[in-house]
Image (cartoon, each protein chain N blue to C red):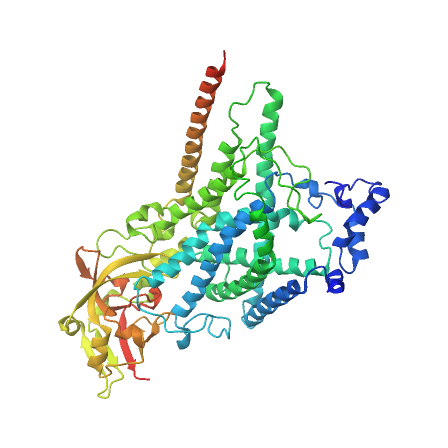
Length: 163
Length: 468
C-alpha cells in the first residue's frame, strides 16, 4: 500500500473512482461518435471550458482589479477617512447586471428571435436591450440607495461620537 | 508558509540553490512517480498566472469552496435526476426519446405516471429553474478554485494528473450543459447540432466527472466545514476578514500566499451569491407561475399572446406546422384499431359525445408551464368507441405533415386516465371557455396529465388504439 501511494500519489480508491469516471465519460463520448455533428459538439465542449477559464474569468478578474485599483487610488489622493467603502456598491450591481446579461444573452442579443418568431409566433417586437439596461439601472439605483443610507448612518455615528 | 515550495520564490538566479533544495526536501513527499520530472518542472520559474502570488483574494480557501460545494452537492443531483426523468417521460420504450438508443446510460425504464398531473411540471420546472438558479453558485465555485487551474507544476503525481483530466469532464460538462440548456430555452440554435443529443451525452460526461469529484473531495469538504464552529467564517466583518489557515496542498492551495487587504467579507460574498440566485429565480418564476408572468420580462416565455383563453405559450404555430385556417373544413377524426375497422367522427360528432372538463397543466421541456381548464372527449371513451376498450398503447397522428412531434405513442395508462382528453375547448382557470385557437391545435388536441407538453399532439387527425 505504501509503495502504491508513493508511486501513484493517492489511495487506490482514488484511482478506482477516476477509472470509473473515465469509463462512464468514455462510454458517453463513444456513444456520441457516430453522430454526424459529434465534432461540432466536442468543439463546443472545449469552447465552453476555454470560454470560461481563459476568456470570461480573466475579463471579470481584470474588471474587478480595476475597481480595487480605484479604491487604492482614492486612499492615496485623499487623506480623508473613508466612511463607507463604495467598492461593493459598484461591484455587486455590476455583477448582477453581468450575470443577467450572460444568462439571457440569447434573448437580449436577439439571437433566438428568428426561431422564436417562426416556432412560437412571437414577433421580434420587444426591445430586450432596453429592458436589460433598465434592470441594470434599477440594480445600481438600489445599491446607491443602500449606500446613501449607510453613509448617512455612518455620518450620524461619527458626529455623535465626537465630544 | 511562503517558503515551503520553490515556486513561491521564482526570482531569477535564486531559488534553485540552497533555498530550493531545502524546499524540495520538505516538499518531496508530495511528488509521486516520476518525481524528478515533477521536481524539475517545479523548479522552472513561471510568470503569472502560474505564480501563486497572482491569486490575492483573502476569501479563497477550503471553507468557502466547501460551502459552495455543499450547495451544489444538494442542488446538482436534483438537476441531473430531473433531466434523466425527462428522458423517461418522453417514452424511450417507443423510441420517441432523443437520443434514441442510449444503452444502459439512462434510468431504469418505467411507465411515466399520469398522477400527480403536475409531475412533469415539477420535474422539468426544477430541471430548468434550479439549473438557472445555480448558475451564480457554479460560477462562484469556479472562481473559488481558479488558482488550482494555473498551479505550478501542473501536476505532482500520476494521481493528480488523472484527477485533473477528470476535472475536464466536471467543469467542461457543467459549462457545456449550461450553455446548451440556456441557449435552447431561448431558441438560440447557433450551435447547429441537435440539442437533445448533445445535452444528453454532455450530461453523462458531467455525471462521470461529478461522481468522481464527489467521491474524491467529499471527505475534504466535510473536514473543511467541520473545522472550528460551524459557520466560523461567517461572522467576520470586512475588516476582520483574514485568509483561512493554509491547507496541506502546497502549490495547489486555495489560500492566497500574498493576500490583498479584504474588500468584502465572506458573508457579503455568500450573500451576493444568494442574491444573484434570487435575482435569477425572480426573473424565471414567471415562466411557470402564470400570475407572475410579467416578472419574466427577459424570457421569451414571459410574453403574452393577448388576452382570453388562448393566452398561453405556443410551442409550434399552425404556420410553422403547415396547418392552414381551413383545416376545420371537412375535418373528421379517424379512430383505428378496432375489430369493426375505422370509425370517423367529425367535429360536431365529437362535440355530441360526453364532454369531460379537467384542469391540467401543460409543461414544456423548456421549463415553462401553465395551468388551463380543458374540455373534450375522454381518450378512453374514444378507445371504447373504436372497439379497443383496454388499449396497451395509442398512436396519435397530427394533421401536421412533417415535424419531429407530428406523431406520438401514448402508454396505456395515459390513454385510460380519466383526465386524459382529446380537448376541443380551453379556458382560463374558472374563466370563460372557448374553442381551441388554430395555434393551440384546433379542431382537437390531446391533453394528458403529466405528459411532456410537446407530446400533447395538436391538430389530431387519427388515433390508432393498439391492444398489445
